Length: 156
Image (cartoon, one colour):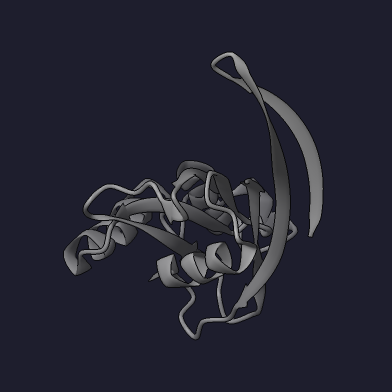
């Protein structure tokens, strides 16, 4: 863990704040080719380890065929999301995907483009600022192999 000193003003009194920077990696490997998994508890554990009480947390996928996003953990919504992505980016396309000339995973890359790479969540009093139903998810679009995410936390 690395610390950086930052001076901030609070009213007329000068206070000294210590900013921490904490980073860790988590690995996931799923049997399914495409799946969405709730990783909120994993992220909470890392936040607790960091000791940060006020700041931000960034959760990023380190692979071009997986995503991180925040939404409701409702089984129907998860299935609807996978179905929506399949309709937007079908596994087979005529004519074929140009990327599939060299690799056979163009749909996985395109689905990642739609969902995105990462989420940034504010942290208050040691807790992620998530709404009542919000959870952090890892979406896998080309599974059956180990992949990593990075969790970076900056704060005090």
